[in-house]
Length: 423
Ligand SMILES: [Zn+2]
Image 1 (cartoon, rainbow, N blue to C red):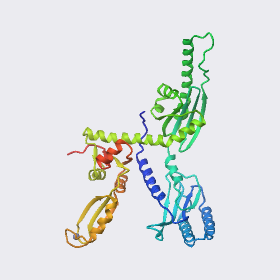
Image 2 (image 1 turned 90 degrees about the vertical axis):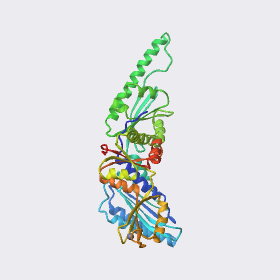
Image 3 (image 1 turned 180 degrees about the horizontal axis):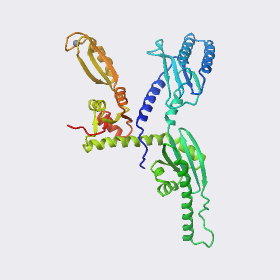
């Protein structure tokens, strides 16, 4: 089923960035129960939170292990220092992760503090002291952005519902009122079928009208999920019951066992897959557009690090496509004495060796052992240029065939241009 969802443009980037940070935070482990997680929703008073932290610090003085006690108290102290910088929470609230993280085995802990402003308002207030950081509520936000419409339908019942994040609300429930498949005595089979068809048609029309009205009011409806246990869902979505706008937003047709609350739960269970599927369709479409420009030699495609960098800097690029799997470091080797400069693209694991090697390498221009290294994550660097130039950025996963093609065939870096290059 084709889906005609709006491209997410910068959205995929902010999500990717947040997700990358959260992955990093989730991978960190404390020596003991000594990592602080603090979620402050926008309507919380800072001084209330401060006083709770003071209480937590009081409780922490009872911790038996001397090291753990010290680490917890330090972390609470640091958290309070950061919190004090705010008169009130930012519009979307505030999340602080703070704690002593072993850098290289036990005894090498270093205090790390992360202050995040979520991309959407957080609703929970949460204080946790654990051996890990609690990133789940923020991960939830990543999923919560989009509103979907859901229509559950079978021959007897129909439900129109909305889905935002993991919250589903039933807006309208209907029954077909169509009697069972047994005809009354004396009725001809053909007449019975005709009547029945008319009734089914009326029922679908009624469901369609309600769906059009309810879902049509939702701004930025991301997509529509049609679900049901039998063939009704297909008859309904293929017929002329939904208006054109809604029809082209159908993102998935899902098999479930029941209509009603239980059916809605089934859809919810499947939404992560469905939403991933929706994004994959978008990604496929974006990459296919790029491949079309390459294949037809329109001059509107650019790929490879240096070409794309040029296209970005000159303002020629309109959309930047980056593979999420792009993991390269842009290394610049410079001489401190002369103007020697060399750019290299390396895998991050190759960088330490280069740094060691350069310690005993002479500058090829002035022969002094004065080479230094500057490094930057290539993805971050390209994103920065693109943001500065107002270019749409699409992060493309490697989970579709097209995503693999972008990664393997084009080094994970490509751009669609505003107009064809001349000369
Ligand atoms: Zn030199």
